[in-house]
Amino acid sequence: MLVDVCRCLLYKSRMAFDNRSFQIFTKNRLLTGFEKEKEGLWKGPFSFIQAADTQFGMIEDYVKKKENPGWQEEIVLTKKAIKAVNQMTPKPRFFIVCGDLIHAFPGTALRKPQEIDFKKVFSELDPEIPLVCVCGNHDIGDTPTPDSIKSYKNTFGDDYFSFWCGGMMCIVLNSQYFQDPSMVLDNAREQEIWLEEQLSLAKLGAFQHVVVFQHIPWFLFKPDEEKEYFNIDKDLRIKMLKKLQEAGVKIIFCGHYHRNAGGSYENLEVVTTSAVGAQLGTDKSGMRIIRVFSETIKHDYYALEDLPTEINLTSL
Image 1: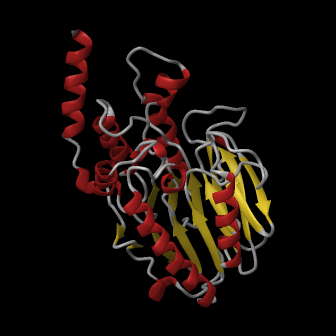
Image 2: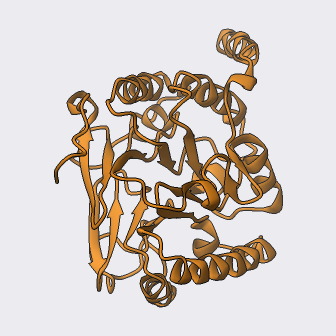
């Protein structure tokens, strides 16, 4: 009884947080301020931050298996990440989180308070560094529904969209449509049609680079590896990798694995970044700094305690 009362009081205090300080930047499948007309041309080297699986609530629920799990540990780790990013010079152009923003599935009791705390924590991010959210399986459900997609979009923004940054075209995908679209076949088909349009534009656009962001990686280490929980069906995987590679995509950035991984399909690189939150391997909680140069994209994973304050954009 006391636990329930405490939870109720904590929830009310969270509700007092003004969500207006958390900005949703996506609208009509585009990222506001990063339109092709404004950002489609190369303007020189820049950096951005790629993170994954902040997943508020996983450590105490899944790893420590506590009876009444909280998410204070993820809050501390995420605040540490944000503080480090805010101090970086020059400022990263954006901060993208590749899915599983929170741990509680749609429709469960802890969903709303975790959403509120996520927004509250990320309101501390420098307003000149937009937060870009990618949906993961915990954000919309392992088997998403029209309601779970709608709820996610109302809370965090579009579930797939595109944007441009300094001459780099960015395509953000809802990977759950590749994993289990059984309850949202129309939504999955809409993304498929939209993606064909984006890839046609990528082929014709003469952009400096084309990259993709999604939650579940197509593969962890090898394109022909067997299907498992942390990758996507092999037949669909090869079909889509070929399509993305032929459109000029250079790198696909992912999360989901809670460990670092990666490999290549021909000249297309798949990069899986470990979690800000719970770790399932030997990596430490951290993020990836991506430096974009005219001819190449360099990326390095850092534990949170090792993140640099100076980002070198003058040399590889």
